[in-house]
Length: 114
Image 1 (cartoon, helix red, strand yellow):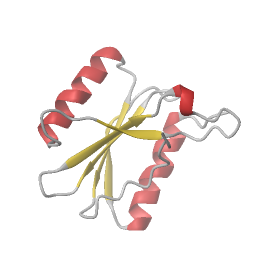
Image 2 (tube, one colour):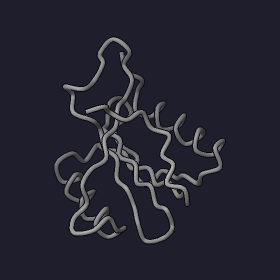
Image 3 (tube, one colour):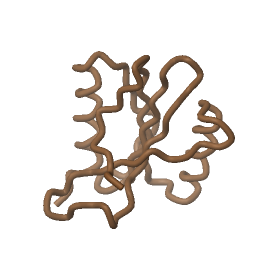
Image 4 (cartoon, one colour):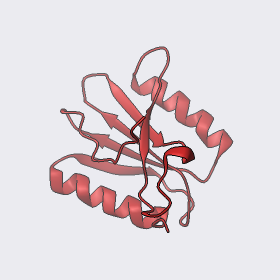
């Protein structure tokens, strides 16, 4: 069984704060099971967008949320991330968005292994 999205995001924001990264909730989604997207800004004009990993890579027994980097076109800029997230919102208006600012690009996420 997976943690509710609201609880996961709250814990993630605390984790970022403990590690010294600035993180804020930009968009609140469905409390129970809204998809979570994380934008990591390295404060040099480069961002990385992480979203839910494909369900085929999920481990249903542990309930751990896995994330995968999402492609940003034409370049990994804040504008490209914003445009991608707008498309995601049109598809699923219940999603969550967390913004992280960290010069080292740390994300503190469990990533899917492909």
